[in-house]
Amino acid sequence: MRKTNSSELLIIHLITFVITVFVISSCTICNFPLYEYPPNWKDISKRDSVINLYSKYLKGKKIFLDPGHGGEDRKNRSKNGEIIEADVNLKVALYLREYLEKAGVTVFMSREEDKTVPLLLRSELANNSNADLFISIHHNAPAKWEDDYTNYTSTYYHAKEDDYEYEPSERDIARYIQRDLSYVMGNPGGLGSFDGTYSDYDIYPGEGFSVLRRTKIPAVLVECAFHTSRLEILRLNDETFNQIQAWGIFCGIAKYYRAGIPVIEIINDSLKYENNYLKICFQLKDSYGINQKAIKVYFDKNEISYSFDKQTNIVSTKIEISDDGEHLIRVICANKNGNHSLPYHKKIVINKNEIKIFDAE
Ligand SMILES: [Zn+2]
Image 1 (cartoon, rainbow, N blue to C red):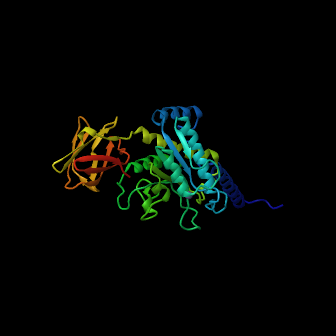
Image 2 (image 1 turned 45 degrees about the vertical axis):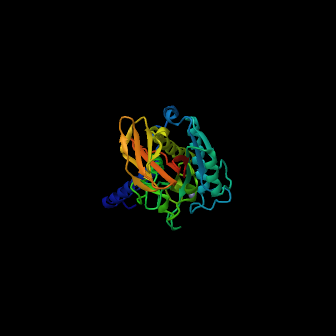
Image 3 (image 1 turned 90 degrees about the vertical axis):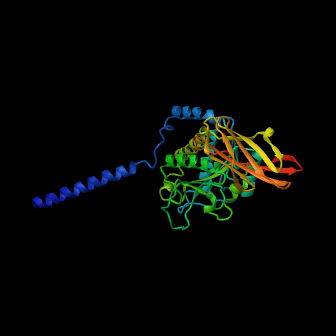
């Protein structure tokens, strides 16, 4: 029998070493988690105490959840067919409902099961619900079918073309949801915007998303991730991961309300029309204080000057009007946390020194 010489022995040892390293490293890769549990969600008692804490800001609110697609609309799916967008949207929405209800929110839904709900009906249901907030939940897909690597989290708000600051309150909500959702998923925001939030006009120039345009209550649309991504294919059918996604949206909503929303009220006694001048004052209210620099007043679409009393938080305007007729006044302000007031649009009708005020879109 031939004896193994020293160089052959060395090669055998080397091969054994390489195989051992390969086996160990591949096992490590196999066991590597695809996602982390958020620290404030990990154990149930911690989770409940967070929900309890946030209930201070959420209790009594009404939120409308809209899981995208479903029923006859089930065509959006991953390449391998395992992930169906409509189903994942619904799972995330149902878990989100659970967290919100525990925090004292009344939750409405456009669908609670796999059924067809036309786009127009979704907005109609939301508008009739008189909810404080509408959230449409979706998962994204790339422009090219063969692209299985693009993946990010994005949140959309309805702005105006070329005017992203038009009614910025929806953008505030989008920012809070985007930050916490992308954090818990470990996903970046898309690079098309600085923080992962986008105006819906970026996607559909000239009109935005139908569901955001037609919904009259504050509304955002979340694209949690790409259901076509080879990474997300491994995670989106995992119920624990869906709960974590819902947790991210829940925390974003709660933190938005925690930061407060300034309120604008007209001071009826201040309303006067004399010598072709309209005088009108607004009371701004916010427990964190008003950021004076963010106050804007528009009259018939033009930004106008005003005076602001820091002690009383009263905005006063004096506008020259030569004829009777209809006018629009719009006021925006923000609190010291950066949260803006909800849209405040009023129609003012002047008829022979008589003034009437109505809500306007
Ligand atoms: Zn979708």
